[in-house]
Image (cartoon, rainbow, N blue to C red; front, top):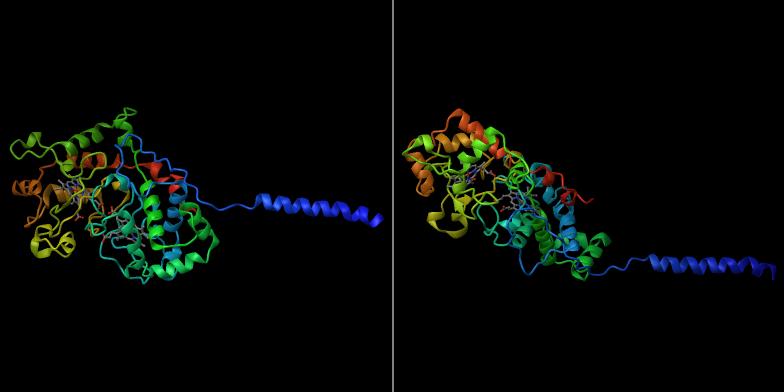
Length: 361
Ligand code: HEC
Ligand code: HEC
């Protein structure tokens, strides 16, 4: 009897602790809570109707974006070349892949992807962001891994099988689910809080130099009245995202010097020769070097190019043919400085430091 008195409480403690354990076991199931995209005063984004952003989908995409297992030797993630502190770009002229081979183009920045209505990459060879997201994995100059191996590696990890279940309702990992999740994460990266945005919202004023730069940027080039002529940058880098969803030749080279055929490689159309996607100029001060081949190190060099060094060629944009024909934009030293100062107002420190976009591991 004495023994039973000792044993009984022990028995209850055991039953209780079992019950507690059961209660704390997390049930992993799909969670379709929508991800609320914030975008300040930008216009409505163009989001894919068949891949609605959910909290769990964005979180999975973020894990994959920072996951080194996506590369052959587990040394490189998307973020190795798309660094948040560099505006999700790379400051090398040509990014270096896992085999230590250099790519042939400069890494592009990743933000405001829902405000692009054209395709992805400098030549637009990926129609949708989800198509784009799998290509770096198998690119021999980048991550050089097979999708099959990546799926094998991730399938062995409860961290991932659980997260795939939360995002898509089953733990099976497929290329399609990976691409949809990465698309969601990249769509969630938004930049809308630069000094320029605050100026637009009436929260602050630009300095005198920045304001002159803004006017030069937005005013058309006028070959007949140079004293009233602008730099016409907004002709191509226009709208809220400072781009135009087109492929253009901005006069980097003459025909004989085209080293990269750009858009022509995708369409086979000679009229697309050496045309490249007009990139957004948001956060541009953070993403040197510049142009598809990273040939310019500074914004001053870029402005110098548009001012005096546009090369004539068969596919040069007509607006720039006019500038080149007339001997350049005719900018003063002050004008050039003002343009660069305006470009610097497009830097968004909120986006650069947003913890939601950072490495989750
Ligand atoms: C080795 C460096 C490297 C790695 C790793 C890498 N990228 Fe890139 N990324 C680049 C380069 C270079 C370009 C431009 C390539 C081109 O246009 O041909 C680019 C372009 C892009 C673009 C196009 C942006 C636009 O505006 O069109 C997206 C999106 C992108 N990468 C996402 C990713 C994702 C997602 C991953 C991981 C699965 C990844 N990148 C891994 C270097 C890299
Ligand atoms: C005719 C269209 C057009 C005009 C006008 C134009 N740009 Fe561009 N810009 C482009 C294109 C296209 C590219 C990409 C070219 C490439 O890499 O081959 C580009 C690239 C750039 C880049 C580099 C972006 C990066 O991510 O590497 C900067 C900076 C830039 N332009 C600033 C300006 C400024 C400042 C002006 C006005 C003085 C201007 N642009 C006028 C079409 C234009």
